[in-house]
Length: 523
Image (cartoon, rainbow, N blue to C red; front, side):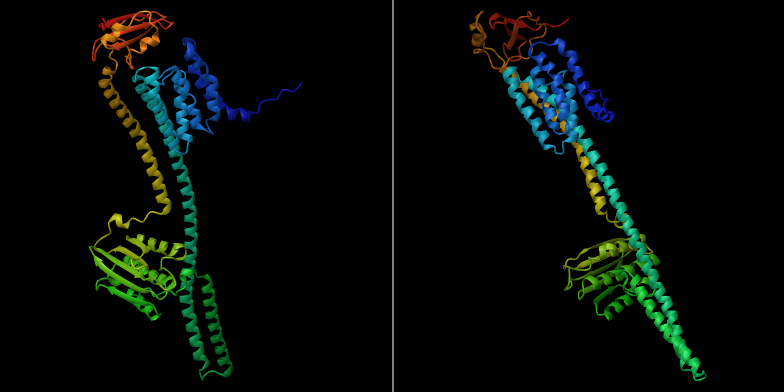
């Protein structure tokens, strides 16, 4: 005998949700199957195996799991609303919205069910009213859960996008912090070069003076010469070390702290750049707040450095003006012979640092391609007499922020669709049913001559050849029900009439009764 094996607990836990879903969906069908007969009974009995297949394929093909219960639902009732399959349609509609990546296949399926329900109701039921009930059931029992599933999927994608962007921004922040530390070390190295180099130069100068002092003997003069040579060698080694520590965008020597923009432009022009300066008389850095003056100097310095590096030979135009409590600086260069312009800074870190400097000063920075094919950097900075509007001082959103905002807009759009689509479809359904209610009475009128020509005992197929295609949905109020083995249909005497023609057939499809019934007010 094969030894009994204990079931794997992990497998049981993995299959438990599917088993629970199947049992929950089969419950309503099991409760009503005893009260049905004929084709309705068999369609309800088929619910358990059919829903088992739907549960099995719900992950790989959710739309198939939704489509399978539709056929037996229509066999049971033309309006699609059945006790045995109602919960299944809602559940698989939700799962289809949550698992199907695209909405178009589901929309095509809903359209096919709606379009196919009209001829089915007209041919089988001889009336259009079940079609309106089918549309209402499809809207509330299938489409609405599908929209809820779509919204859940979009919300999950938004959350996943947010976490991905958060991780990306964290990595970018770490990279920026690392670059900032390196840049700060390079600046410290520059400060060391400026201060120690100056001190070593003074030492070498004094040692040179001692070397030629006639009051010293030859040995001391030789010692002074060695000291001067050692100071010179130390200066050269310091310069080499500082060159190694500097980053690419810190290769230029530091400028004096009190240097004006005009002096900065003069130094750039003396180095061979073609630079023009347009500056108002009241925009000197000495007349501006300290933070604004430093930021203004930094914008011009960084822009000239980038133009020299990335657009050599280009013409650079520096314009500085003041208006409405603001000082605006614009540095624009044409396209150089070797490239498009000054925007291609190493990884964009130069502009990132510049944007941070301007933002801390309360201003706003804009950088991008210029109208002449070069590159333009412009900044607005507050002066002592005013501050920039918040909309100008707000930094530009990053690519990650724009992507997150796009995902948020998509979720909000899906939410609006989830609310607006059912409301719009319901309004259209009410409008169509109202129009049909006004028009349909004329389609169910049985002419008096045809009614008189009907004889008891006539086969139903011959009787129906004389009848209108559409019949009344229900008899007039107060009409007594027919015997159990009779099937009765009703036709209008004339439009908007309270009376109707009653035609009853037996199981052998023979006409056994024809009469006129009138509406009776219920007590």
